[in-house]
Length: 329
Image (cartoon, rainbow, N blue to C red):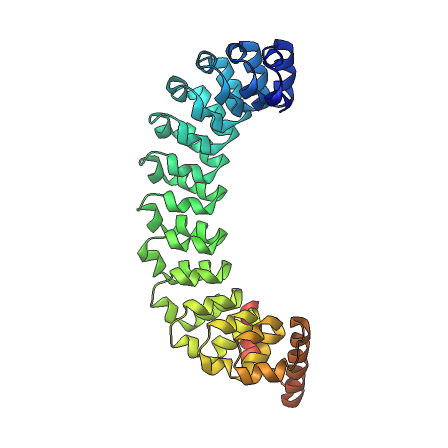
């Protein structure tokens, strides 16, 4: 980038320009105007960094060979190619092969070309957003897209967002994408179960009926204790559900009703998992379990020690612990 501060004479020197762009293609921005029309200089620049096409003179940006070289190196350089080349299938295929998201700069006709779109979504599933409406309803195209990036489900047709196989494959990769499933599937127990077992927070997007399903909610909080935030009001007052949540993530104590923030066993289990969770307990238990300025690690150790004494007293695995272990498996 030293060329940026060079004298005009040096910026107009072809040999200097060639050396500069060979090292950093974007140095083309600082070479003299006549050299940005020089085919050899521009070709050298885009060979090093396709984004340098932006700084080429219009005449050289119309050069098909230069554009092919640029998009092969940097697919998104298709943005500054002339419209005629954004409608050139070979150029666009080269671009989306390098970066599927380059599809957004392809012509309307090529966004409806199945070969081009398949190539794009195989490289970047989110390229589905730029595909034609027809191809966003093509089952194979959509499956390829969500296999590469499950969040591509957002851009599938309404019909395919109601397809159990398509949605099932997406939520198995990341349950959070249940957000984009059709309402019918957010009411479907099997689909939601797949989602929450992968990401408990997916419970947020389940239907109200399923957020009242105790077994399903238990599965969600075993995966992520914070999922209790999205359980029904009744299940957030279910002691076993609460215990399961705070054992998985102590800070989930923040999301439970106040009565449990005063429940000694609940607070101990939360603090044992995460000493910082003590700040969500009632004042009395905070003062008792953190009498000084103990670190979170010391609080967790104190809580774990007291829980161990409780277990020794009862000498058996509690019903809650048995349920938790079973769900974890």
